[in-house]
Length: 281
Image (cartoon, rainbow, N blue to C red; front, top):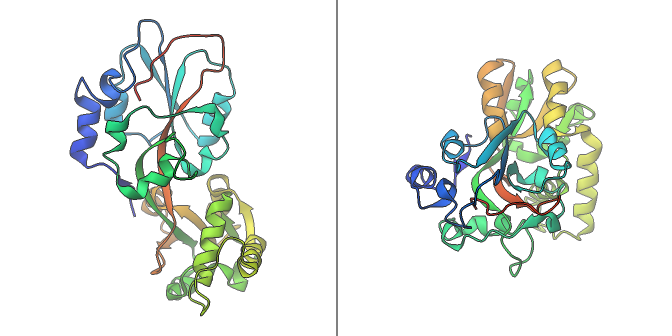
């Protein structure tokens, strides 16, 4: 269930260590010309340490404890470039106009085809790439002291609608993810996977929404750990450390598969007086 790099380990090391590529020397967008060229903002534990070590000397790394803290930091004006590593769900809170296109065709060509949509932040095929998707994984159902539900895991995502979970379920806040889960719940029906405007899909999303105690995967996990919730839909990246330290928790990936989560690198437009320049991407 761990996150899956979109680039091989060899490519990741190359991106971090070769002086003429990727993050190492700014070859993808021009080297900085003195001064504090910019900052790389990330959430603790989510970015490879090799990338942080390979930043140009004029760049600074700023590590925040939570995605919410990172977004709050971005509200402060900055005349310098800011490179941001964040999950796709959280990036939806940033206006697309605030982000610069990724001017790195050689790097983008290394990506798997499934990463094309997230590189455009799920805009149409003609939209510019504004993100570099470097890792992805699945969403899973995390249970607390519910062996009865674990035995019924063959029911897949439909298990989220079990009456015993009403008001005791934590869901992510992403509308796109809720729609994807509802589509998977309905896909086993004779009519197949419904389109986004389908009345049955709208009703299913509402049913799912009514089950929730909280629509906030990160903060809502506090309800699960405290015993106020019995189940949560979380990323595999988030589930693994929780499973390692809390024996009350179990998790499973429904056999029908899962929507994907993405870790993305994006560049924010400078938000203060004109300052310096080139980003490493």
